[in-house]
Length: 357
Image 1 (cartoon, rainbow, N blue to C red):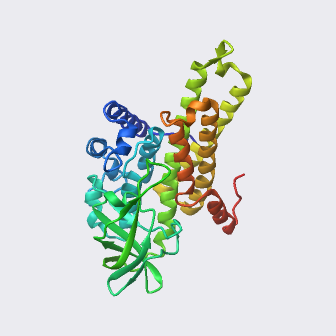
Image 2 (cartoon, rainbow, N blue to C red):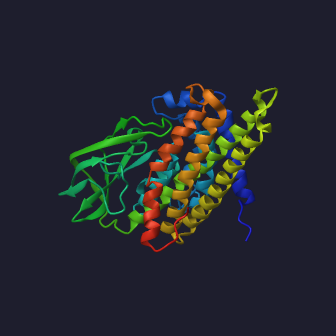
Image 3 (cartoon, one colour):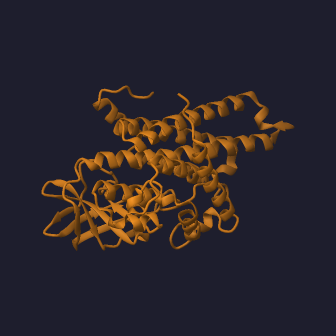
């Protein structure tokens, strides 16, 4: 089996990469982070209007492009390589897939056009549980707290996973979310307090949808992780070729060559397992198992590669001016989001599957 990107998927990746690179010449990463929205709104509009990144996995009958989640996976890997902050993970993946699972397509056209819709799901400990949330619905109102709401402060609409009659359900509400700080400044989280907040029921029983939604989100994270790991490797190789010590490039030292070779193995294996999971997300086969394999492996691979990037760059890598520290923070943030490696390995053990070493 020849498992590789199609010509169209490679063109999609190149188009995203080119647009991000051109825009970075005008508004760089730090300027985007410091903006009121936390991301470059003009770049996001261009990505949606010129390439249609938010519409890729939305069916055509709902105003989308009618492709699969794997095409979104390709885009996320490119955005992960440049650490480009965008609402694609929170709105284009998480919220859109929640609406599709609930058979509530009313907001999908807005998401496809680039409008930001957020999903409030994580509990007070920051866990996206597959059995519900800390929010309770009763009598048409919501009470409780949701944390780690991706792009919640920038969202035009808010979806909520809440417990109703003892089981998880999906609601829509006009409540607002308050931005909360994060170690990784390229990810924008928010917290929402519900106090007798009116809400509209979208799906009365969301029990079966939650494990699949959790798996899709975890797989999407692996695309960002692979993109970030590849960029760390590329930057490290370039640095070792340029930086000299004792009159010769650092990259000529055998011990450093071995470390870079180990980084390459981490990146390539992570990409393979991430693509396999992305393909499963697009085809719906063995989704939870594939997500567990990919998220546990890619989380540790990216963390390892990012740590090696800092080490091999030396002291400059921990300065604010250098991007290595941004990749290091992104690696550790994504390692926790939608389940850490230990949690996903526990899922594999519960299903009687081998755990990756």
